[in-house]
Image (cartoon, rainbow, N blue to C red; front, side, top):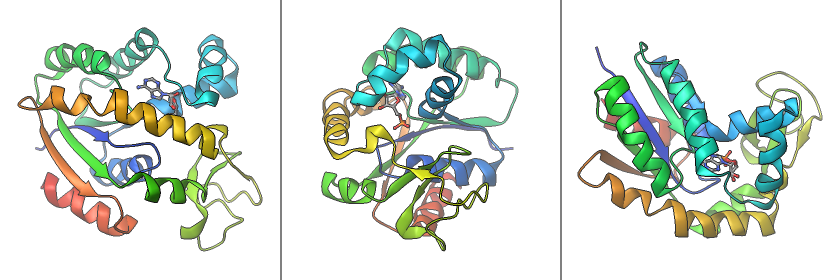
Length: 216
Ligand code: AMP
């Protein structure tokens, strides 16, 4: 039996969410996306959502203490399962340092990092085509849809909207935060976890194949 404790790492817009969804379905392990959890809180207009929205709209990070509690709760609920994919967490050195003992205590297993890599230019171009389905929350790229008006997940027509944090000025801020604050997380994992770096400019299918190959 294989156990998968995976972190999908990479800049915003690099395709982590898309791949995490596919791999989660193939390996039957939960996809834990902190961005999705926060967006769901925003749509419910609960306390977390109200706090997070202001920061997310500007492309800023939500404070570490909030994020750590949130992920800890989700992981504790998953401890008997065969693994998980963390997508969008850890995003700061502090989050990585707090996550380490939690994973050791709950799972007694090493983490594996899957890093998707692409240059800023590619990411900015891609994000121009990224939309969110306003009905089910699915994230799509208009260039890769058979029908650019219909959500492939829930079938809604004309329900795509652009996420506020995918606007060019916000995305530039998110990329800057990624390079300054999130990238140093990789140094923390040196010697603690295997990191597989994958070319994110490949097609969705090719990236999936690469990920499955390195996990084999
Ligand atoms: P994502 O969908 O992963 O791109 O996340 C969207 C936004 O949610 C980010 O730009 C942050 O504002 C917030 N967010 C998601 N995950 C985290 C995290 N681990 N730490 C802080 N903020 C986060």
